[in-house]
Length: 207
Image (tube, rainbow, N blue to C red):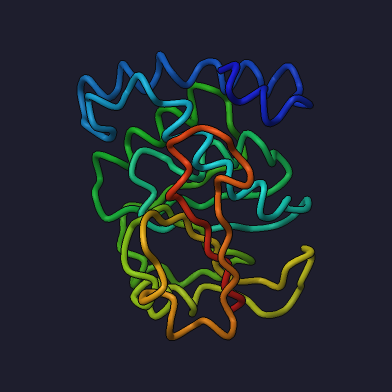
């Protein structure tokens, strides 16, 4: 939890309480339904919560922004972002019902009122949003192909045009090559100094 405050020192008391509650909730649910590697649960704040919040370093969502999280799993990156941006709305989509259940239960337990959930593939989701977010769920070309229909190009309210922000690891040059004229690549080590982030990247693509 101190790690979150290190990089986001201006949290409200409610936000601090919500972030602090995540560890016990995820540890409990993870013992029943595996959404995080059991070996990795002790690294929840660094590897999952802070990693998700890299998107908040790329773009501060303005009030009224709508975001869909594709392949949310147990709620990453959407739940940490929904705490950070209580005046934006987050729609969490995953094809695995058990994972959506965990995300729903954790969201309810910490009192989030800006999250909705759907057990489906992104191909089945027809609603439109300002932004798509995702964390290492599929190759970039597939993510763009399947989710670009969900990005509305009207009502631009943020400092970046509506589009896609995803979190990736490793060597991305080949993956982003088809989009290199449009894509912006962020090194997460510029935001966070922990060793975990040395190879981690963020990709923004207007759609």
